[in-house]
Image 1 (cartoon, rainbow, N blue to C red):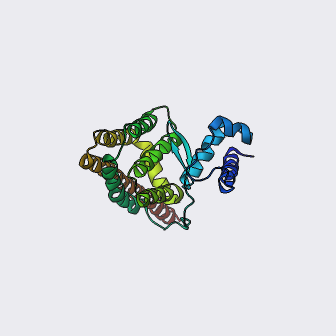
Image 2: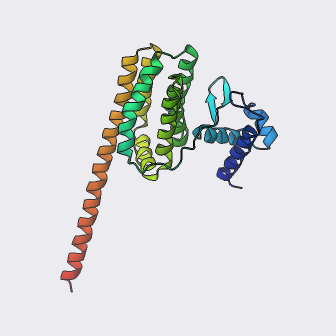
Image 3: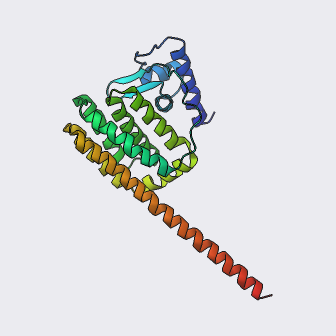
Amino acid sequence: MSENRLYQSVAAEILALIESGEFPPGSRLPGERDLAERLGVSRVTIREAEIALEAQGRIAIKTGSGVYVRPRPVNSLGTLPDVTAFDLTAARAVIEAEAAALAAGRITDAEVEELEELVRAMSDPGATDQEANESDRRFHLTIARITGNPVIEYCVHLIWRMRNELPGVRQAYARICHDDWSSRAEEHAAILAALKVRDSAAARNAMRDHFHRLFESMLEASESEALEEVRRRTEQNRERFLATTRI
């Protein structure tokens, strides 16, 4: 079985244990080592399975505390809407900026440390794109959780599903984040700095600035791709013309 299929299978096994009532909502899952021994897989596979379950909203991973079972969603998130990366980023600038402002008024020292660890992981030059993206995702989901508003948390979970599961959106973000990872790390550090001093206005502005930069980077990339397409078509037309005139 491939690694991808293995972690998916393990995620299904963990979910079955949750659904059976062995691990009810609010309870803490056993540690990675214990689950790995019980299910006969590596700790890395357990970690990947838990990340997948967190993305589905079934568990919450709290750095330094453990993994906790979330209440079963009342409704499935269902089919994702057909949106562009521009649509999603514009919405994020509104929703997540306000989430940061709310979180600044509620954040605890332990939650500051949790976000600090994620920023460190995101800033690690040796991290793969996948590892940096996962730290990025958890950073934003943690802020949503800190707001204490389940609707905001639900919306941010849905946003990340669209970011990661819609092909066009995923490709646009992957290109920008890969090429400009240092700016992303600096922007998240600025958000964290505002949260750390409990400054709601600064947290809102830092989050908004982050998405404004992303939006502008996407525009530049889109313009560059459009110009490249024009050049390609121009060259094709030139070749057709030259081929015709040689006849």
